[in-house]
Length: 249
Ligand SMILES: [Zn+2]
Ligand SMILES: [Zn+2]
Image 1 (cartoon, protein in one colour):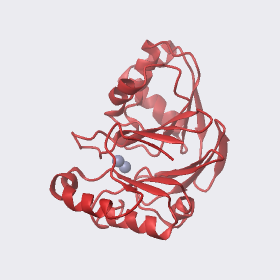
Image 2 (tube, helix red, strand yellow):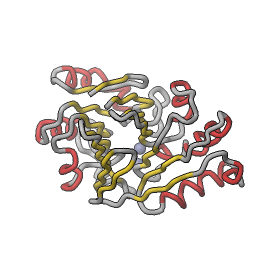
Image 3 (tube, helix red, strand yellow):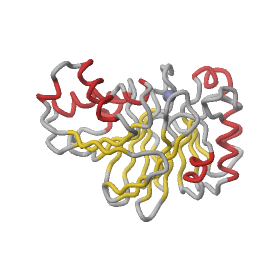
Image 4 (cartoon, helix red, strand yellow):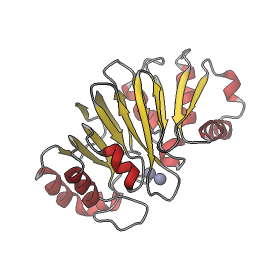
């Protein structure tokens, strides 16, 4: 697989964009992981072909993870997309996505040149889609958030969305070749967020290949970036990516 980071920040990070990335699986399938406020502009700076995207995964319904969708759809329509677009997420994904589009651009869905194909994924469930296996687990976040494990037969990948990894999320993370995990504070401070420390601990305990730390509090980046960089650089296979970084694994 390949991962291209579109953004690595939290909701209010003006320098790093909302956390989102683009996965290309070994069979060529392309999956957008979350689509917050800042993501469409970054996405279309990278991808011009309207039919290139196969699936969108939405981890939860905080704005920095899904309110970029109306603009994404608008631009895909402008560019002439015709292929149906698969959108995968928790219960209510269809209603939330349609409501967001209706608020941003009323009656626009009728004009779209492509259709949505919604797929629901529940916690502790596994489905097959786009030639891959998709498994989800609930994390500890202030809103219902699903961590996602993707397997394409060659590699295993995990994306946390927001929240700390509990028992089930840890089971999905174990043995993955590449893990992207939110790391909001330096140490576990908020009950509904992970931290730099706890993400590094996960990497030590769960036989992870590589781990990328994203969604750092912008205050942490501003005040403690050098400390975080030292912690990351002192370890093998640990990344603090920025937008437009690309990793093959
Ligand atoms: Zn977030
Ligand atoms: Zn959130």
